[in-house]
Image (tube, rainbow, N blue to C red; front, side):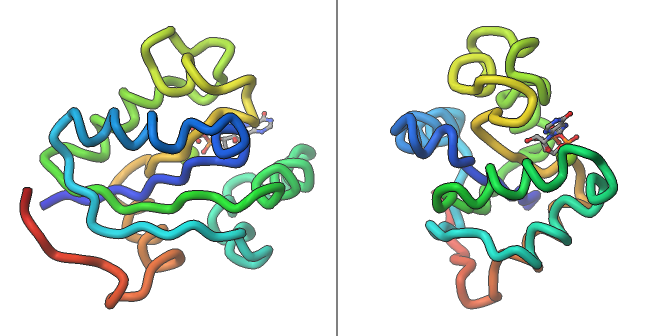
Amino acid sequence: MERTVVLIKPDAVKKGVIGKIITRFEEEGFTLIAAKFLRLPDDLLDDWYAHHKDKSFFPELKSFMTSTPVMAMIWEGKNVIERFRVLCGPTDSRKAPKGTIRGDYGRDVQANAIHASEDEHAANKEMDLMFLPHEIQEWKR
Ligand code: IDP
Ligand code: MG
């Protein structure tokens, strides 16, 4: 079964909407198979956002992403990668329609409430960076 990695980012953690975001995924019928609440290490962020490491906004992005702990999760289900990207909405929260997670809870292009893996390659990389094998629970809803 397909898996994706989600981070509930510091802006959404500060807003107190962790539960509301998780509820959306539960109501869609997806299965939570791993979760932890942690402050992201600096070197993990370098790997996670390697595609942005030369951008001018990278230092600010890192300080935003470490401003509170984040809720990191793996979710499982049919087409979960694509489905979660749709539920999140576009990167820039100001352009994200109401009803999407970023449209409802995000603020701008950086503080956009949530991360969800872009594709299977990213999902595999992010699972390896974030979770140890014994932290992933195999179960069926
Ligand atoms: P995605 O999260 O929708 O996949 P990416 O382009 O992979 O978007 O960017 C990763 C994260 O980097 C975004 O979610 C956002 O928090 C941050 N980011 C992207 N572009 C900008 C920017 O132009 N300014 C500030 N932060 C940005
Ligand atoms: Mg991305």
